[in-house]
Length: 519
Image 1 (cartoon, rainbow, N blue to C red):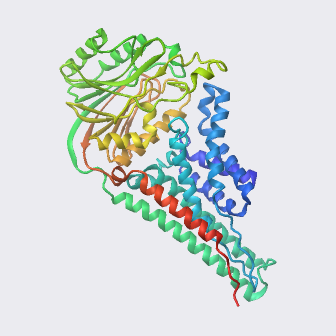
Image 2 (image 1 turned 90 degrees about the vertical axis):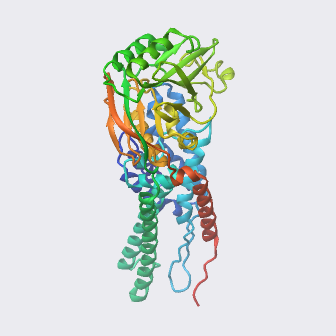
Image 3 (image 1 turned 30 degrees about the vertical axis):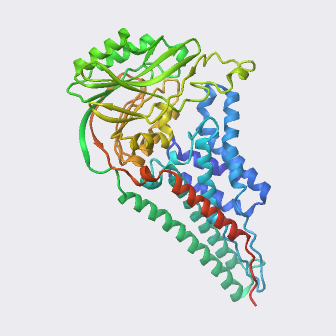
């Protein structure tokens, strides 16, 4: 039990970027779905823990560069969601009624995708506002399930991956039934009658596998033809500015002036006319407000010379212990016309929960100040059009993109900063999140990072432009603005949560019903 549980988690991890083998998630979830119904309650709980360690051990490995103990704690916390979830899966207590035929209980089949979906939802909201990085949906951003995100967002994508696992598990059970019938295994009923019963069971498993496959295929086909943001309402030429520089450095180890001047230098590589210029997150760092500062005037002069709206990431110190993280917009006349303050802060990166307690236990010098959380949807109304803004970490939260689009955003804009990460794990996960958000909302998406990846993503999830990690670069591209709403933008996660709850109840009912022996 221990080895298959751990292996299933490792297979799902292989689907998540930077590895990106989307098909491996089906194998991992199929192995898990084959194993879980055979286990007693304690075994299912242990399977959840080992699956979580196999999944999050590799996908959250980047945390070790910040705090090794925190990495271990985070892996265990995230694995705990699957411990609780798999404890809810009914056991297959099928028995041998008269005639020697084993009657399976099918309750686990609807319950398995339900609990996997609910575990993902729980991860996305708790603790500290949720931590969806390393999740199953990210591993499907490069596969066929991506189209279903337009209908049901990351929860539907996650549930469909688990449903695919159910189908593979049922194929495995059909093979087992066939093999036992062929071998005349004890309890299968030797001879033609016993073999016929086993083959009948195999047919039932094949039917279940076919039903799971039909559900997955139907959802993907539905996503392909579902509303995808509607016709264009405008076209826009954008310039993404990547100042370049070393990677794997913490913010306190970098001179803000160097980052700012790198952005200025890179911006001079752009070729007007441009409608929108996007700078990354926190490339402007100030000891006080941006309004009225010399930096505001300098960036305003740059926007005026380019005849473009310019959006840049700005951090402002507020006293000795706090700061704000904003996306600030300048119009083509060089004036600041609005800003959006980041709502979803990075726990232990942009703020420290329970700082007053933890400061007596661990060294918090790497995070000396706490970000002040913003409020409301990420919408900037600019001459380039209404922009739906997610700042960095927020792109992992489907709710932030949805809020921005419902507020009127016609293009998704992501100023980000991945310079703290030495490997490509987080940057590639972020690109996968870009693809999911673009498809979910039916919007094109542009992202700028000081060291990469800077990207242009279509509303169908195709990455049409992507920078290299590290060097100074600019990307220029033409994008479209749209104002139509996808099914997911209209309904959000509630339909998927209701469906998962209903499937779980059905699973409990089927898993608990009594089987009657024939005759």
